[in-house]
Amino acid sequence: MFTFTASYAFLSLGVGTQPLLPVSTLPWVRQLADVVSRAVFHVPVPLVPQPTGSGDTAFDWAWTLCLLLLAVGAGLVWAARQRAAPTAGQRTAVRTFLRVVLIWWLTVYGLSKFAFSQFGLLNSWQLAGTYGDSSPMGLLWRFMAASPGYQLVAGVAEVLPALLLLHRRTVTVGALVAAVTMTNVFALNLFYDVPVKLFSGHLLLAALVLLALDARRLRAVLTGHEVAAVAWGPRPLWRRALPWLLTALVVVQVGLSLRAGLQALREDRVATRSSPAPLKTRGFNLIQEKPFNR
Image (cartoon, rainbow, N blue to C red):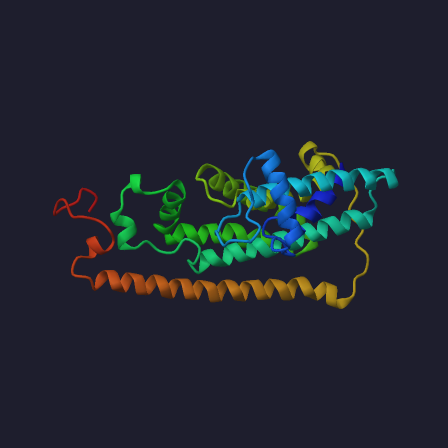
């Protein structure tokens, strides 16, 4: 099981949807995905990449299926050649890779929420529209944009696990928080038809695999049993300092993003107050002079 999980983790997060190494423009990759997509989904894949803003295109699903099959083969070969349990070095390599991927993407998406750049702020044309005019994704975007405070909370929910994952003593806690956060994100993407289902699902799987690597210790916590402490060996100074330097960098970026976001929010509120019809500027129509909640 470890061999397949490790193989699929490296393939899917390394060269899959929103990968560390983009391969979607390679002709042979698109040709292979086209063959698989036509055979399985009966949908052709454009041989020339087209910007769609979606991470759930026919290419993405077909390429993910290719990587899944490749991971099965690689896992079987790996297991046949190494019949013993995975070594500590192999487990560490998988753990480190998953940590790097989660730290990067949780930080990227978290910072975008502090700057209000992912969902933005509500404007008059959005509020003037009806529910029926909104797609499920559009409705979700307006729901998030309606509350800058909630966007900040969502940003904390993503940046916090990234910071915890930076430090080896808090990796398990960080994976737990990341799993909770990504479960919510994946559910929103799935049920509001946001075209990032594959990617968010893989980030959720990455957090769950990190937890699975610590399953014995988690089981001990839940059952009240003792478990031997991890023997940490001596590390060079740069390895001890790097997590704290990265923590400081992320915190600084949070501050800069938050400053930019609050500036945008302030300008939005000033424009609203200076409008001759503030409620209409915010997309509302006055129906009575004394609202019940005032």
